Image 1 (tube, rainbow, N blue to C red):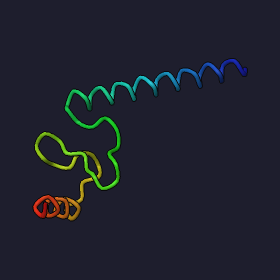
Image 2: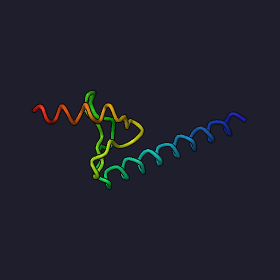
Image 3: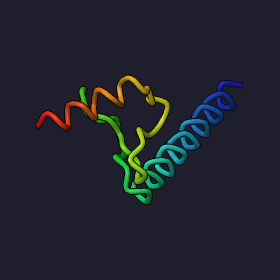
Image 4: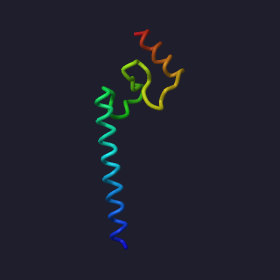
Length: 70
């Protein structure tokens, strides 16, 4: 019975690894940063929008204002 649990855990780990590799390759194909950016930076897609679930209109305008100050 224990062998079945080990086999299931190994398959789940292999599936997760394949998913992560596919996701990273997809980000590279879209010319996005393939990992989280450093604190204070944002992932920006090709259209200039904040990518992912981190979109916050207030954060976007603060970022734009900071770019204009420099």
